[in-house]
Image (cartoon, rainbow, N blue to C red; front, side, top):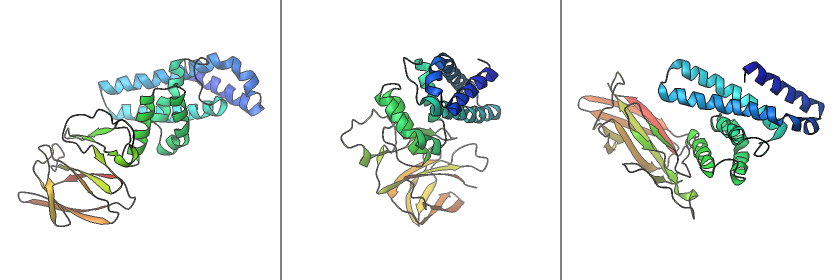
Length: 269
C-alpha cells in the first residue's frame, strides 16, 4: 500500500470520528483498516530485517522517522476503534499495535500498558510479548525486570543481564536463565552497578582494572573491561576510582533518581 493511500484511509477514519458516525459507518472499513495495519506490520518487519544485515546512521534515522509515524497512526486508529482483534482484522494487523507500542517512548508505553495486558489476556498477543513489553519498559527506566527477558551487550562484547526483582516474582515460575557470570537477581535494598572500562580510543576494554568504591577495593574488571557489583542501595554520591598500572581515574556516581541499576562507560587514560 502506498504511503499516500495509507494517509487517505487514516484521514477518512478521522473524519468519521469527527462526524460522530464512526461506529455505524466505520465497520464497513475494516478491510481497509486491516490493510493499513498490515502495512505498518510489514514496514516494521522489513526494518528489523535490514537492521540485522547492517547498522548505519541512515538506518537509525529511518527507524526514528518510522517509529514516530507509526505511533501517530496507531494513536489515531486506537482512538477510533481501540485494539482491533481477530476476526475483525488479521493476526498481523492486531500484532502491529504491539510492535509499535513496544518501540514507543516511555510515556506512550505507560499510556498503553493496561491495553497490552488486556491484549495478552484475550490472546490477541502472546503472553511472551507482554513479558517482553513489561521488562523493556522497566529497563528503559533503569528498573529491575520481572520476567527475565532483557540483557545488554557493550562495545567490548560483554553480555550482561538486567537483574530480576525478587520482590516481584513471589509465587511465579522463574524463567530459564542463560549460563554465565551474571547477576540474575536483586531487590529493592540493592543497586546493581555496571562499569565498562575502555582504553582512550574506546577500541577495547581494559582487563583487570582495579575498582574502588569510596576508597575500598570492591573488585576488578574481567578480560574485556567489564565490572558488575550489587551494592547496598544509595541515593547520594559515591566515589569510584579505577586503577591499572600507572593509570588512574576518579569519578563520582549519583543515584538521585533512585534507579535500580546504574550503567557507566569510563575511559582510562
